[in-house]
Image (cartoon, rainbow, N blue to C red; front, top):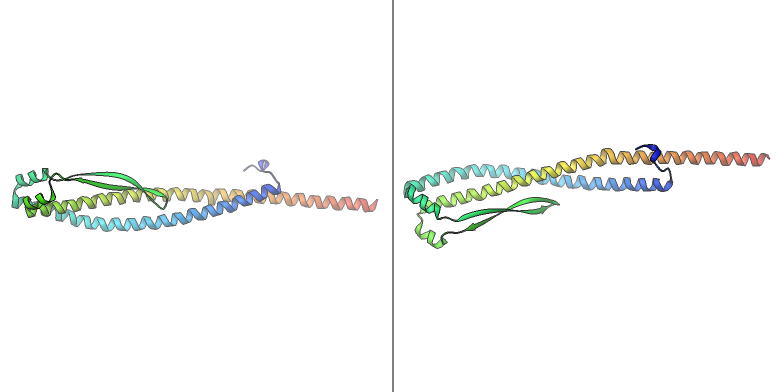
Length: 207
């Protein structure tokens, strides 16, 4: 900040010091929020690692169950029943987590056959395969949601880092430099006034 543009008044010094306090409080709030988001980020990353391990096992189970269903019922029956299964669609909404809007995936299932009819007409092996793939589908949806949330949290953490660094390394030092400059100028003026008063008193005393 060019020193020539700075008002060297006590009011300006008070305002500048108030801005330093406000900036300090804002910095503390940003750091607190950043710490909370970092903790949430690592917890979410841990959950994703566990779910990915479980998902690998789910893929194996689903593949084996579909092979068994095909052996027992035949491919034609398997394909016919697959065509009669529920239609599943997913939609994305936003939810608020610590002030951060992250995606929330909702799944809607529209059954083509009644559950009671399926239990009677569908072979057990095919029903087992269906449950295995439905479980895998739900896991995929949940992992996708958490990974999107993870990316959103990372974006917010980086944004908070930039804001905190700007306040800590630019805004506050600049304000402190301004306050020190004003204080120095006011001190100089006060000393000049004291010298002037002494000089005038000396002149008056000597006259």
